[in-house]
Length: 95
Image (cartoon, one colour):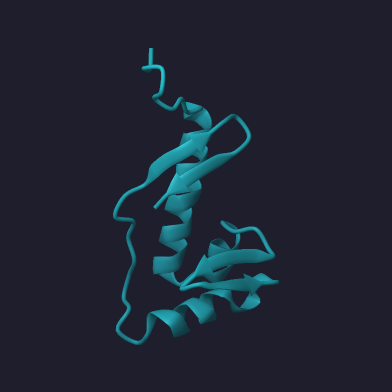
């Protein structure tokens, strides 16, 4: 049983969310725009560098990633994946 202040996570939901991250990274590294888009919701919102970026449709997501990553990019990997909050119907992961 977790300590009183230790977070409790729904293990099935965490496993499902982690599987989506695995598919996302595999599709990104394979350059598979269709499979990559299937791992995201659209419109897709990302807050980074103090700005909000919005992709209304999946058609430019991979090309925009490649433009941001630059010519030297060859693959990506998660340094870590940590659940922050997880219930049966929603999971927040720190990556």
